Structures are given as C-alpha cells and as structure tokens.
Length: 245
Length: 221
Image (cartoon, rainbow over the protein chains, first blue to last red):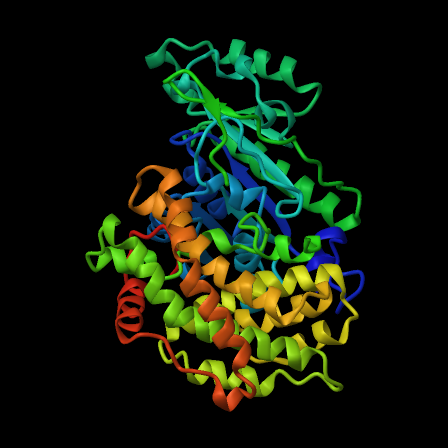
C-alpha cells in the first residue's frame, strides 16, 4: 500500500524488492532544473527504468520541454497541477505528486528512478521525505555569487547541491571556486557539484552521484533526510509571509 | 461542542490534495464568470453538485456501517450521475487522497479495506464515507463538511483566479448558509442509491469538458 511505501522503501507485494528511488529536484526559477532532468534522462535512461513528474505553477511547460527534448518516452513524463501552491505540493500535502508517482510505477514499473521536479520558487522550498527519498537543490552562477552564502534549507540540507551554469561565470563576474567553497562551508560535509551542461566531466559526476544514491536506496542504507521546513519567504515589498494555505 | 473530527474534515489544510481542485470555478472563469457572480455560483453549486456529493457521501457512510461493506451501489449510482468523464476523473483523484488518509488512520477497518475493491477507484464521496466511518462522525456532520468544503474550495480558488479582498470570501460563505443548510437536509433525506439526485448542471459538465482540454490551468477541474 502506498502509505507503507512512504515509510518502508519496499513493495509489500514483493518483499525485498525496493521500489523506485524518488529523487526530488528543487531550486529557484530559472536555475536549470528542467535542464538537469533532461541531462539525467540522457545519461541514465539507457541503464535505468525511469519516469518524471513535473510540478509547474501554471502550465505543463516543463513537461513539454522534457518531452520535446526526446530523452524519455513522452508518456513517462507526467505534469501535476498544483493549484498555484508549489510549496504545498512538495511538502505540506504531497497527495497529487504521490498519485502521479504511483501511476507511473503502476503503468511502467518496476522502475528504478522517478525524478520529481518542483515548481521553481525560491530558496526555501524543499521536498518532504513523504515524497522524495533524496533531493538535489539547484542554484546557478547567474543568480549571483552570493547565493550560496544566503543559505536556506535547500542549500544547507539537500542531499546534493548543484551550482549550475558554471560556463556562464566569466560573463556574470562570478568566481565559481569561491561560490563552491561558500556552499561547502554551509553544508557540513554534504556534497556540492559545480555543473554545466557543457561540462562532460561534471555531468558524469552527477550521474555517478545518482547511481550511488540508488545503490544505497537498494541496499537499505540510504536514510531519507528532511532539509527542514520552509521558512517564511520575503518579497521585495519588505514583509515576509507564507502563502501556502 | 463538536469533536475534532468534523473540524478536521472541513479543514482546507487536510492533506488530501484538495488544493489542486477548484470545484468548477476555473472552468467557469474560463467561460466568462466574473468576481461579482461568485456568490451566485456558490448558491448554484449548493443547489446542484453539492447535494449530489453530500447525499452520496452519506449513503457511503451508511454502507460503511453495514456488514459486509459494499460501496458498489453508491459508487455506480454516483458515476451514472456524473456523466462528464473529467468530473469523474477529478472525483477519483480527490478520492485517492482521502483513501490514502483513511488507510493511514485505520488500514484494517472494514470500511477502508472495502475501498480497495472498487474499480477503477473510489469516487470522493465514497472515500469520504469510509473516512467518516473511521473518524466516527455523524451523517449530519459529514454532510456539513462536504457542503462546506464545496464553498471553501470555490472561494479559495477564487483568490487565485479572480483575486480580490480575501475577507470577501468569508462573507460570501456566511451569506450562503441558508442554502448550505438546505443542501445538508436534502442530502440526509436520500435513503437509497437509486434516489440519489442527478444534479450536475449541464453547463458545469460542458465547462468541465472544455477545461480538460485547456493547457494553461492552475486546477485540474
């Protein structure tokens, strides 16, 4: 039963066979989440049975991007409407996403890996362990070299932090090495990866990281951890509030 | 003073996925509904879809209390009165979240195990009847929760779709109270699945069908 799946990563029907690893991809708008999903599909779909769930705020744009990228059969990419509540859908009430993941597993299973892309929002939105077994959080150099220092639950606590678009660094006057150092110091030993879609070495490292999490998920040594609750997020008009209800 | 269960059932934050649903508001807005007509839409829903929804929920609660539990008649009667496929799909999607919650609370309860035999999936009122049995709520409290949820769903979605002062929405709900009470009473009076009123308005069905083909949506129905 699905509720059992949330607490035990094994199908009750086939004891000992782990269900698919559910990997969340979070991060602010425009940092390259969809591109990372496309990269992961390109790198791993040949060896792993995969599916993707996207959470757009208003459209199925991300799902369409991925379908048009031709990296997975289109029916394995499912878009979830989130009623303009992207935070809610990955934390407070993950029902819609669980439904989508379970549908994909039912239709195309057994799967090895299901990627769940959050609707891009800000630095505070992270996945609940009720939905994602592991998560990567994506920031990019074009968002400014100080982003990693700003912290937030995704930057400090996600299983992997990606500093994306490193190829743009010279154009936006960002020191990638300094940004990665900032990130590492905020993360208490958790990994940081400097990535560009034009950097085959970094892409290989990303794929290897996913393989290693999957291996730990399968042998039962991966413990899903929660990067923490979302703090109220601030807007430019100067007060902070939460709009998840 | 009611217990906590009826309050939980009426709480929009109950984690069962309801925030993806607008109870027909988004399709109505696409068809031209304006903010000043929302109170009229609420009254219309209370006289139509909400009665069917609440009555089916009460029938399911009664079925949940029998031995053996058989939701077949109410599930079939409700499906037959929900001819637009997108509305059946929406109800099944919402029912799934309710079913998940009921399983979490009482996986071995006969009212819950009987849900798993329904194909393709329990519609929301059927799952709510099971949840009501698990939570031990009265027919009247459960019907009230369903009717209130209808109002709350439309008004919450209105904050996204036809934004305005959120305080207005509270006033709209209170103003709809006589119609809400009448809907509850009508729902409680339905005795058998065969008597379940078929109230989904034609325009609601047409708009739901159009909405299913829309690409730029916030809500699935």
